[in-house]
Length: 350
Ligand SMILES: NC(=O)C1=CN([C@@H]2O[C@H](COP(=O)(O)OP(=O)(O)OC[C@H]3O[C@@H](n4cnc5c(N)ncnc54)[C@H](OP(=O)(O)O)[C@@H]3O)[C@@H](O)[C@H]2O)C=CC1
Ligand SMILES: CC(C)=CCC[C@@H](C)[C@H]1CC[C@H]2C3=C(CC[C@]12C)[C@@]1(C)CCC(=O)[C@@H](C)[C@@H]1CC3
Image (cartoon, rainbow, N blue to C red; front, side, top):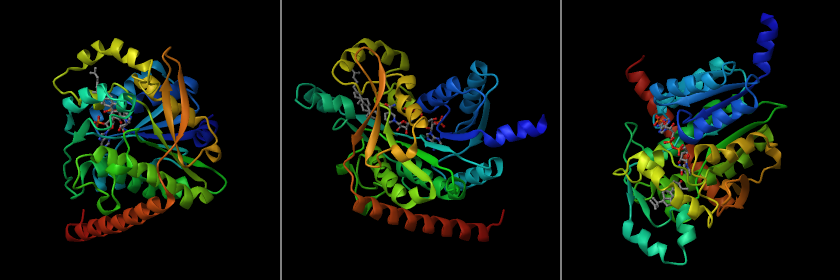
């Protein structure tokens, strides 16, 4: 029996989700377990372990036989990402899906004037679908000296993938990376001369556009080794991230807007609103053959006016040349941070 149990565990697909303790990440875990409770090994990679424990017990309450593990990772910290990856390598002998979902939009500023102007312009639908032109953020710097949004949303995940490369690139097997990007990702917010977005006021958009570019270049470098990457947008979902946009509004006031949001949904199917709906595309990708996916498309969760969920690919405004240049810059930055880490370890050995 023990041998059989060991074999089953070895065969079960391993799925790791960053930012799995709330919102869209947690909804994805719930949806995955609803279709296959015992056949998956889920790893919730979270920063806040108190919230992670709560998510873990909620999942086990609804799926008592599920195999759910917790992993501590702070994607804004280089050392945390590297030790988390080492822990993954110790615990598992395979990694089939890596959902790079953790993300922040710190200190958002909602431009009320631009919002009301937008309401009466012909761009009103685009404004509701992308949040373009009405949101800016104030970024911070991490103790490692990198921009916080860039590090959390993009570079921490990039380092994680690089560390896990041997597990993700296995002969005769495919693995999938899925980046939670956004329709707020915009070329104009991103610059190759300032990949961390030190100078601008749209670090969120810049980091998400960078993830779109990075996914493309990862496909060109890794498809031959069985590793595939895609990007998604969950639509506009009411989560902690969005509640933070109007901090003077407690979460319950947002829910009072729900009828207005349902009305807006009649005009734009991007108002998915619930984490369950937002996770639609993440769940859909789990069921696809990675070879059949378009590396130039962003896959969107959409909800119709009648409340039906579906997934749709939309071409991204990206090109291979820019994505290759970004990749080179990220590799260069990786070399620098690794060297710094080594030097620090030499100075004060653990
Ligand atoms: N809500 C929306 O409308 C949209 C969201 N998205 C994207 O979806 C993703 C999930 O966000 P959403 O579910 O909405 O919001 P939540 O705030 O509910 O989830 C964000 C998750 O990311 C985690 N996280 C934040 N910072 C870090 C970090 N440094 N290290 C590890 N984990 C971290 C949070 O963990 P902790 O508990 O520790 O804070 C949390 O689990 C994000 O990437 C977001 O950009 C994209 C488009 C629209
Ligand atoms: C309170 C009322 C009546 C309207 C809310 C207006 C905005 C706060 C709201 C409209 C479109 C939303 C939106 C986002 C945030 C909140 C809005 C600006 C996002 C930018 C959130 C993060 C993302 O990644 C985008 C995909 C969202 C796009 C839409």
